[in-house]
Length: 141
Image (cartoon, rainbow, N blue to C red):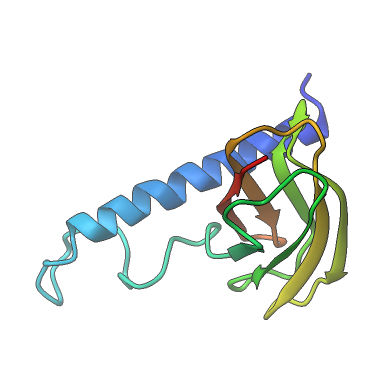
């Protein structure tokens, strides 16, 4: 049986993959005529339900070990920020994650970049109660 954190990561990774696939689909179907059934979205400017949360990390790129970062965004119709995950449970990129404001229209969280992190790129996932979002954190140590 999988742990709750593993299920959360798998769910968020699936949402991230869905967002990526839809983004590619939007780019590929951008020239479709209005009113046609080409593509799977009814509104080409909006991701599918379940993947509508937006998330940004600041400062980013070139975040360093031990640096505090601010995670902001919107829940895209979700009920409010429930959790933030930086990296993966076995190798967290973010530690000491604190939700400052869980508001559905604009959320704010703070976290510290892990001391064991190296140069690279890793995901930052948010769970907004029915909507998920992902961005990339670029580290330079």
